[in-house]
Image 1 (tube, rainbow, N blue to C red):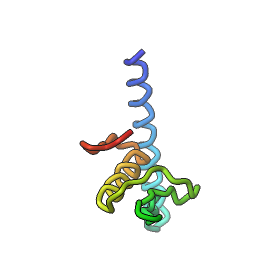
Image 2: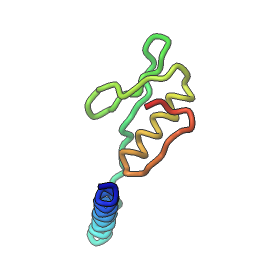
Image 3: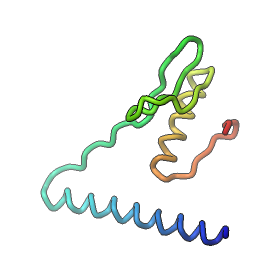
Length: 93
């Protein structure tokens, strides 16, 4: 079962990459620049904690007690949303 999941993941990554390339080529054909991708996750101070909020839904995806940890976690969530496997050594799941 593990190899099937790996093959599926590799296939989805290839499709995602293909869509990015096709979009880039389309914009170059019409002579416009690619739109800048907005930040998906925002760190918000609530009380004495820092909440990581998904901007599109307004849902809190996690919280951390220090600003640095909150920023690092938001960057991990951004990378995962882009399909990049990334983790921090002290990350909680």
